[in-house]
Image (cartoon, rainbow, N blue to C red; front, side, top):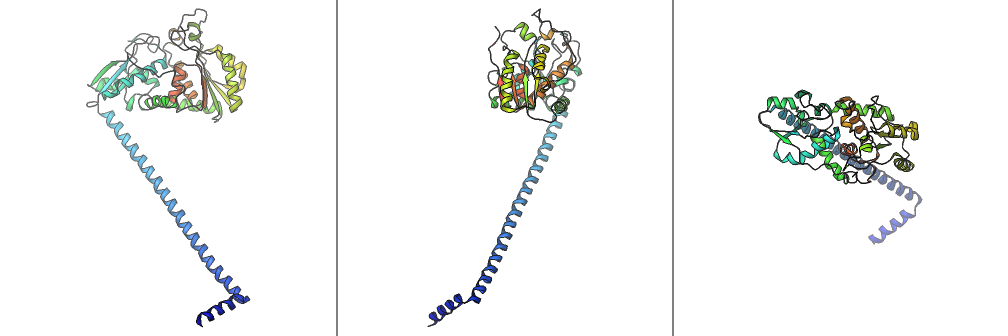
Length: 369
């Protein structure tokens, strides 16, 4: 009887209009409560996530500060401890080598000596080269040409080490394995290996990097959509040095520049070449879209003789300003998004500096015989 009465009451309740309104209010009330609870839960979740993100950022910031302090502490201890730190002074006799040829040799030489636990420094004074006018007694310790362009590890310099340290070894870089021209242009992992050595031991000086960045902004108006072009000319074309890669003709490069541009619609092209004949051809072809670093120095290369290497040109030999401009060019080239290049030390250096180009065309026509 009780069960029937309850059923009867529920039936009447459901069939009554006022009861329907009460049911709706009841449901709405509970729905509102559920909505409020859900919103509170979501707010709590969001708060927890934001708090965790904040803690993570604080952790990363503190970790960076600790790492910076540790690095600073290590560098300071290395700078001060001439008594206990061991040093190795690298040199390599190459009279005809240019700036970046020397660089690639010394960077390669690191691979052979790092397991000795000594701090490597480069000496470009003790043998005749293009920096000292082929006179190894023309410069003093504090005029080491290497330190005009590149850093030595941990803030050291050759003069201070020679003056203050008693634990020094000299090392002739006669055996080395330079960055492979057949691999570095096509393999990002390989180029990144050399990039790490570059950053750790022999990076380009900050003032040159800053100068290159300022010039880059002026040339390209902050655009990042730049095609880099590197071509070696002059003595390569005239003397055809054995075992060096054959350089492409400008007309061949024009065709690939146009193909790249059709796909990527570049804002500008940036050309790096020491050859004014090549530069003039590109200027006539691409006009205002072509950018390059202005250099008022004319070294009057004699193409007719077909014998002179740039190292012996009187306007280049010992000219640090010319070499600094060339290195600045390479730094700007390394910042381009894509690259078309002949295979030479300048192009190799661009691949070492950068962490990778998006699109690459590196010509391989074999080597001069």
